[in-house]
Image 1 (cartoon, one colour):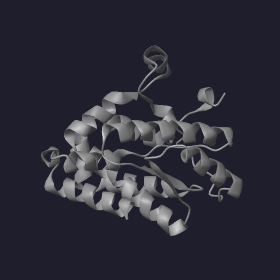
Image 2 (cartoon, rainbow, N blue to C red):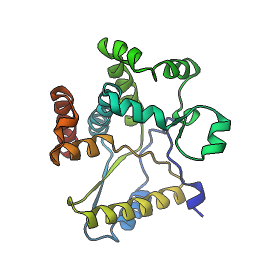
Image 3 (tube, rainbow, N blue to C red):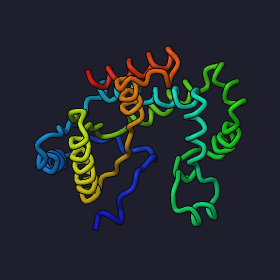
Image 4 (cartoon, helix red, strand yellow):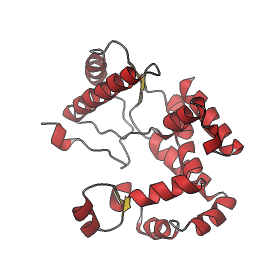
Length: 210
């Protein structure tokens, strides 16, 4: 029954602690897997550190031409387009205010994005997103070895804990950008990024890992 209810949710979360039985059920569900490890972070300062590190993804993505293109290619702008495609990132689900939605439409132009990037606009977006990320009961992480089989098990753990969270009446939003960007660098593809972008990614990743 939880499968049909499962969504990513970008709305502001209630900043209330998880109940002991909710933590117990989530950890017990994740404990069915041997290789991946499941962690929950509830401390206010720890959540803020994780949120700020995760939001570095927006700084890199909006300042990187190819990633900017890929991101805006995924956006679905109208309800008719959403009904037709049945895929992509439907703009209203990003929970932007009307003025922000209008600005977003303008920023799909790379030339304009370069101009606003030069004055630090992506950092403003990242700061706002970090505040929203940190306003939650907890932030979780699945930690695995860097093997194909481990990634499959991590996906299984994610699906199981996600469905369990929905059954508990909780909401969840995935944040994976920095983790996979760093994997490109660790895999020898640092040439995909400028030296400044690569440093931002590595620093953010190590903050999350620590």
